[in-house]
Image (tube, rainbow, N blue to C red; front, side):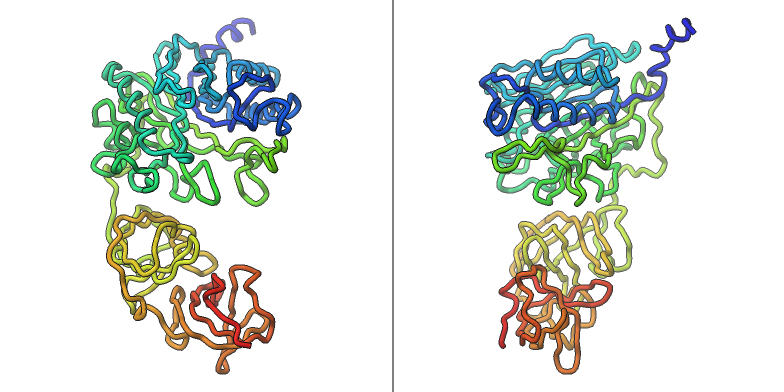
Length: 514
């Protein structure tokens, strides 16, 4: 038994090992430092030793269950709370023998790393002298005789004047350092980059001060020729280009952060060609994923973030980010035969979307006109006589009456209603006269038409007119009229919920005649 115990450390990492990243959402101590965010000043906003211990316990719980061998962390206040976290992990049986953290003066938060592998050395890459611009942590690890460098990042957020040029600055500092590394150096970039994996397509115009140049896509080169680098490509390219494994997940699962219903991929694990070359340490194919235990979600399906309400910490929740992880091994990378060297993107019609259950690859829909837009939802058609389709939760920034070219990424079939759930606007075109695109109720036979000028009487969720009745649904309870009301409906979406129904989105879409 004694000899088996002595050999155990050498067996520990004989198989694949896990690397992860987790933004813990402001892990602060309960001692005044002078650099805290105002919400975390001890003695104010219910931030105290007791509440801090609850937050510490919750983050330790996630880290234990995640069980990563190397873990990058963001939003750690300082070495004091970082040491407290490590002590907590040790007490609950999840100890890490090695650790590193940045020490930028007067910065409210730092980035850090926990490791079960020995740390050979560490350094910090300074992006700016400003305490609000976080340093990048560079850590060299000894993986059973092989060297691996981890870059832990936390780039500028997109809120509060978060222009893309600020993330480009981080990316340039990182690229400059990577350019100095040997050609086949094994390294991994991870952390909160505050950028969507497809930022080259989704960069908000309000924060685009770089004419479309992006830190993630263009500087770190996860995109070449306006297309994401694929695995068949990364094995053939030179140093400096990176593969983003978010692509491995089905589109509907590509998110680890949600803000006011908008899903995003703020955190990343980026891989260079050396992680696919069959030498030293390689990526385990298709192992990337989001860590999603049930307790990280509320009963309503929202991320169970740390609760702060009415200027008080509620001592509930975890973080507003979900952790990411991927597996690595000293065995050679094994490509998947089904993987394509380039993305297949074809141009299709809206009618095509009714023939398929889901999309394997994105498709282009050209010359689609927004014929109705309410909030973040819309209905589009390509021709007055063609099929329409509903845009569910993805119509932000679109304008009613304008023709567009779209890249459609995801579709759904919700209780019979065909809908697009994710798309990217590729081109905004001319304004269109919408009159030919609308239909009378008598001529509307299929879902996702917009019907106009209907007069009928409302009773028990139905609209009665000329001897006919059809279910009618008001999106807000406040819009529901009294039973027996005579209505004139100016605009209605002919939707579908197990059967055809009229959908009213806004008070301007109807009036009560009597």
